[in-house]
Amino acid sequence: MIELLKIIAGVFGYITIGYIINKINIFPKKLTEYFDLLCFNVLLPAALICYFWQVTFPSINSFGLMLSFLDLE
Image (cartoon, rainbow, N blue to C red; front, side, top):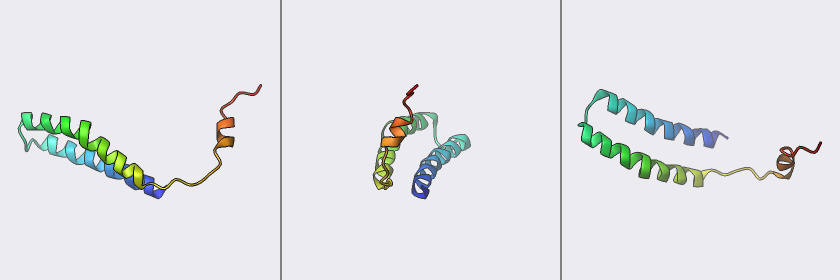
């Protein structure tokens, strides 16, 4: 569970850094639009996939969990 929280914190860290850089107005507007397109359509999904591969999920029996969603009445 801690590993998952580290992954989520890393992704939100990227988003926060990008937000701060955008608010400071270091880069021109055209370059910012290019970064937005690149980051949200290419880099962020790639980072999520790479981080997702690193997570080890516990081996639990999910059959009971699936049955809990059925309404047997």
